[in-house]
Length: 87
Image 1 (cartoon, rainbow, N blue to C red):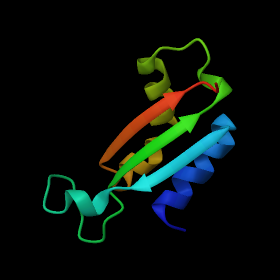
Image 2 (image 1 turned 45 degrees about the vertical axis):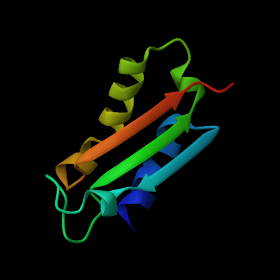
Image 3 (image 1 turned 60 degrees about the horizontal axis):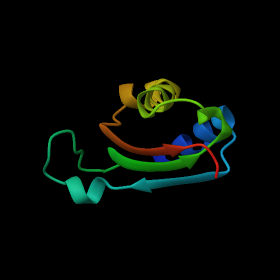
Image 4 (image 1 turned 90 degrees about the vertical axis):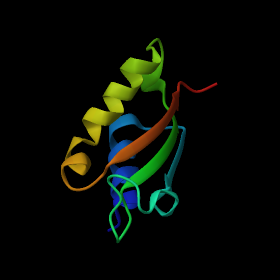
């Protein structure tokens, strides 16, 4: 299973999103800090979930970073987040 698939599965299980897009941006960061030859290091996540209702941007980001903590320990270097409640 690729890292993108694991991220998608983890976020789906944790947040039951109404919208979820996981995009691998690693190729755009080749040669930069944290980039690995095989990629799978830099991602953008766009997600809408009722779990984010009433939370500010920082709180939403913390929730997602905590959910993906294991990925960060196994080579995930950067995660751009666009997180909102539905609607």
